[in-house]
Image (cartoon, rainbow, N blue to C red; front, side):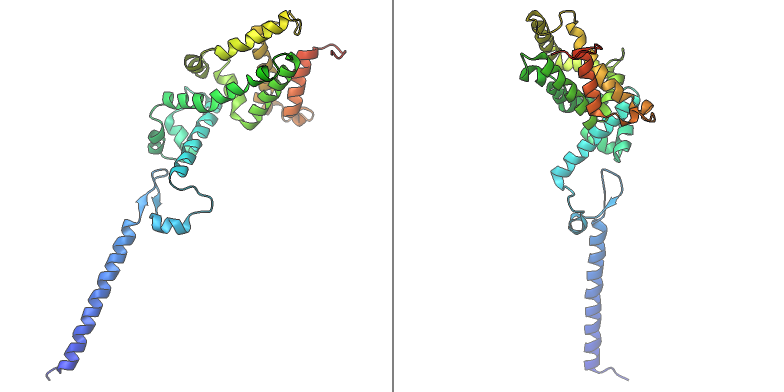
Length: 267
């Protein structure tokens, strides 16, 4: 039986509608596929920015801010590993894994370990070293106040930067410490010479014991403050010493330097 024109028209319209819907679904699927990309930090699939905007965690920095956060995480991871196993024995790949990134992300920011170390010296060690010279500027005529503040700053720096004591022992006072060599090459010893000149002036003015050796003052104070913190894991189980904190270490260091072992309080 012949199909009526009205039925044929309706059927044709239905096919047209169905074709349009199929094309729309295809475009949607294509868009979803294109929206998936690899995260350069972790190598895992990441959703497109349109979907990421709605799923982004509160406080997660986008764009440049996120890049700065990734860079900071890599620097922090490097310091942790350097303090734990030394600079020479730490690779860029290990640092990337410690920070939770791929080696490709590490190389995006730092091409070599030497470049990374130079950045650490400039951004982390340089400011720390400069801050330790402040007491000599603020208390130019009061050696006791200057040394007291210096001890407190050393302990505070170690408490705020848990990697500092171990890294100092491993990379600064050791014979083959790479960090000391690199800092010497980049920064010289101008700050050290200024501090030594101040100590010598105090001795000539009668403000400081003339029997002291100026060149050993910093080493002595570092040993009295950082060494206990660097070895704290060895004596934290002791029922008495486990209660010792940064304040007690700083107080002990200053008392030993200023008053010695005499039972009489000086000044």
